[in-house]
Amino acid sequence: MLYALLCYNNEAEVFSWTKEQDDAVMAKLNVVHEKWEKAGKLKPSLRLLPTSAATTLRKKDDVVLDGPYAETKEQLLGFYIIDVSGLEEGLAFARELTAANPGGAYELRPIMLYNPGA
Image (tube, rainbow, N blue to C red):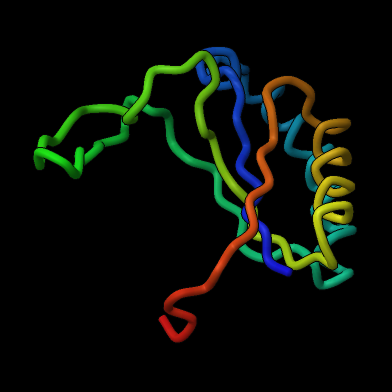
């Protein structure tokens, strides 16, 4: 079953890390990534640029806004696509990521492909 694993954290804190701090967190995450990739479970994963680089199109009135749609304390900073047997295995992956990069939250959401050939 495919899940999107959405990564939320305090953007101001994460983007204030020094290169050394960021490299240390990424090194810990890469240990988890390699394990799940070797098992064939880890699909594309992306790190998003800060919300200051975002543009939102509000659908109901076609208004274009700078930044994200909602103001929140934690922002969507990236996501993974994982192919796991179910929610419990997805949570196991999220827990390993949490041990490598504490803070924020991970949201698991099942994916339904609607344009699989694209």
